[in-house]
Structure formats: C-alpha cells, structure tokens
Image (spheres, rainbow, N blue to C red):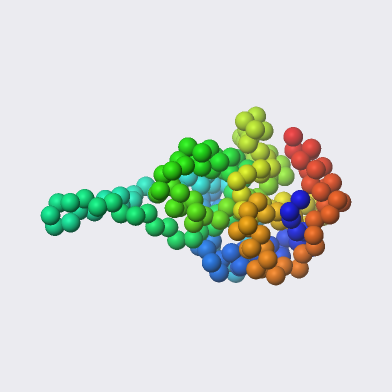
Length: 196
C-alpha cells in the first residue's frame, strides 16, 4: 500500500493547506462544490454534492472560437488553473474514469483534467439512497485518484496516493505520519469487508 497513516483527523488539514498553496481548493459544502479556505477545518460530515464533479471538467460556458475583424475564426486554446477536488466519493471517481476514456483526445477536457488534483474520501458506510456497490463504483475508491483518504475507526486517517502528483503533495506537506503497515492494512480490509 503506497500510503501514510495520519495520527488523527485534524492532521488532514495540514495536507489541505499544502494543496491550497498550489491549487484552488474545492470541497463539498451544503451538497455543492465550494471553494474553501484551507484554514477552515475539513467537514467530515458534509453532504456529497448531487451533481458530482462533472461541471469542473465541462463548464456551462466556454469560448471555443474568436473571430477577427476580417471574419476569420481562430480556435481559442483551452486554459485551466490548477484546482483540487477534495472529497470525491468513489462513485464520482468512477464517473471521472469513464469520462477519461470517452473524452481522451479532446484538448479542452484533457487540459482541465491535467489541471485537476483528485482527492477521494472513502465512504465507511453507504449513503442514503446510494447504489455504488450495485454498479461496482464503491464505496471505496479504486481509480483514478491522486490521493485517497480513509478514516479509521480509531480516529487515524490513511492517505494513499495513486499518482506521482499525489505523492509529491504528501511529501510537501511534511505530515507527522507513519508508514502504512500490515496492521493498518488489516483494519482497512475489515472496513472494506463490512461495507460490501
């Protein structure tokens, strides 16, 4: 397991601060994705947005072409500032995996996708009305994620990385963390079994 174990849930805010130094930090708040200030504590009980993460990859309005004074159209290259979606659920990550496959080669999608840092939060219990298990999309993240967070029953938090960018963020945060060991892997496996 490529992961570290944080001593408590509050330590996760140091990781969020490291992310916010280089990315716009977006988190669930009142069932919507909202820009957050890293100094505010992470809301572990926030309701997951019903709309998922799609709008961050497909904005409702976007300039694709511009015309000059002679009526010649020129393609506008896609631009995206770095952003972090912190708190994606496994079902959101599964949807992004489908998007990645379907929109491969689309320069606008790929630009926004390259700008995104995806941080998943494992669901340690099913959400009301959720059907992720039935469609093989959770409740625990598989891919694609840069980081994935699993809260443990004893208050510790496992932070796993699924990309070089995720590992770099963990290293830059200088977290007081221990390497994930066999005992931690067993606790995570028990959580997985209980949720299945």
